[in-house]
Amino acid sequence: MTGGEPTEVTGGGPGATSDAPAGPVRTCIGCRRRAAAAALVRTVAVPVSGQASAPGGVTVVVDQRHRLPGRGAWLHPDPECLALARRRGAFRRALRLASGFVDDAVVLPAEGGSGGR
Image (cartoon, rainbow, N blue to C red; front, side):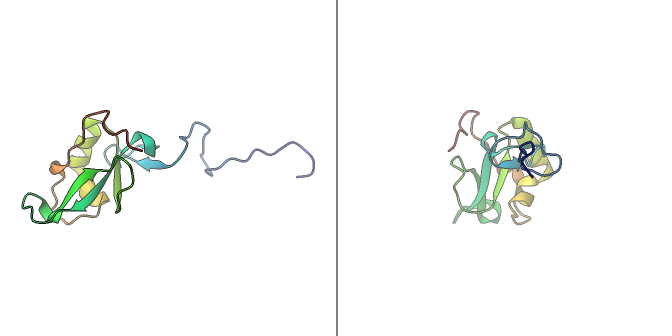
């Protein structure tokens, strides 16, 4: 670099494109597509005490502010992605839950309610 043309510094390594989303990028557990974290809904498993309807003693909730402690699973706020994630058992796998957990119990809020942050 000796006085020639200025060098453009880009991040991301091989295959990085200029149309990459700004900020953190996460993978949807339903469709497996990558997207900006702001475009996805974060879910976490929280312990539930004394409730027989929660298999494994946990329930999965939407973390609208992206601040709840614990392992998170990211999902597009789309019913098709939710259906794919349920069918594949993706919540149990992504959140590392016990084998007794039933993914069908996961419900997303109505669209527009996941504005978080």
